[in-house]
Length: 153
Length: 72
Picture 1 (cartoon, rainbow over the protein chains, first blue to last red):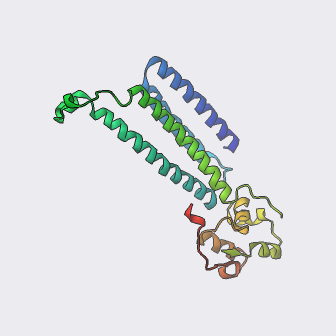
Picture 2 (cartoon, rainbow over the protein chains, first blue to last red):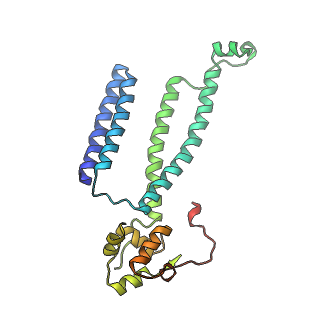
Picture 3 (cartoon, chains in turn red, brown):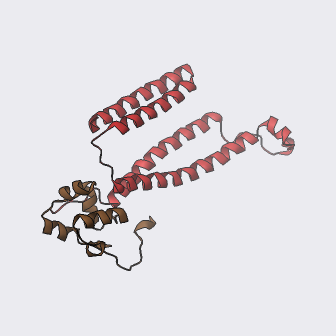
């Protein structure tokens, strides 16, 4: 398979995923978009394995590896920080507080830190952040390892 | 790490593309190594020097300096 056909497949998969995501939001069927996402990733991976004009050497592998590692390092800090707050929200629920024998009556405030809808928005933002971080780090390391160097040959 | 790939390429009358194809990497990788932007693995360094039929020390020279390139 040629490289350009692979890029076309990525485009089609992305469009299909967008349409399925929109449909599953409209019909409130989250399982549909979860399954579609996994199938989409499998299609892209299988297509990638069949491309024969991709030359991946140790330098390009190193660029990918470094970008993925740095993205992961930044992402897990953001994600953990946010998750701690979300867990706080969960533990503050009345039925849990009874089980854990906390006296919520003596607490000065009984408001949620963040609504479940807001938690969803922040998670969506974190997913977008992950994509942008990866693209940014890829550009950075590609430049560092001479991707766009000019040749005086 | 300094190298004399460019010199050996000139001696063998090879373009970056020719050398890249012969050792199975991209032309950009040869260019990055020549310019000192990328330090090749031991395996690749051996492949390059064997292609020119010389010892690895004749193509690559290690300079005893503080390495900061891999810290970011």
